[in-house]
Amino acid sequence: MKRRYVTAGQLEGKDIKAARLSLGMTQQEFADLVNVSKKTVERWESGASPVTGPVDLVIKLLGIYPDVVERVTVPEKAYPLRLWYCEGNDVCAIIDVDDVKRLIKVYNFNYDYTKLPFGRNDKPAYEDYEEFLESRCFPRTRDKIKIELDRLGLPFYDPMMIIRKTEGRLTDDEFRIIVE
Image 1 (cartoon, rainbow, N blue to C red):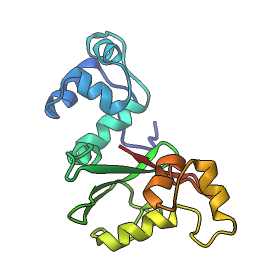
Image 2 (cartoon, rainbow, N blue to C red):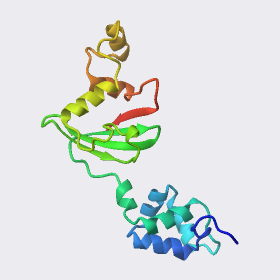
Image 3 (cartoon, helix red, strand yellow):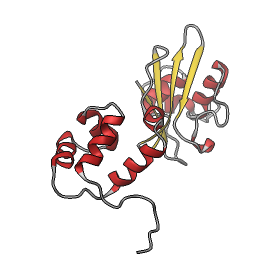
């Protein structure tokens, strides 16, 4: 048999349990990681039937890249405000902000810099953050801006207030900003 990939093709319950335990995870934590229910993980681990499907590749990748779990874990909040920059449902970056001290910390979750809020700049200044927010809003110079602000129920132009109302969605892309 000629194999195209080095994945097992199917796993036994003991293989999944061993991988989960090597990560130091509970069944619920592992279920959350691979986006299935805890009941599914229980069934996999206790079942007599081989397990097939995407979990086979996930287990293989976890063996090759043991730090991947850390790299996809949502970090503790560094500052009071948290923004999730997403393309559709895919989280591209998390931005923590302290507006009072004018501090920003960005956590990038994508290797394609065109999908990151600050491109290749992984240590943006507060001014970069302000520029980014404004780039996700309609321009301040828009004709009849008062009509647009009234439509949003806003008294004046403020990028954060606009983003809270619009999620920073633009007509020409799938990106959005979720304010936590």
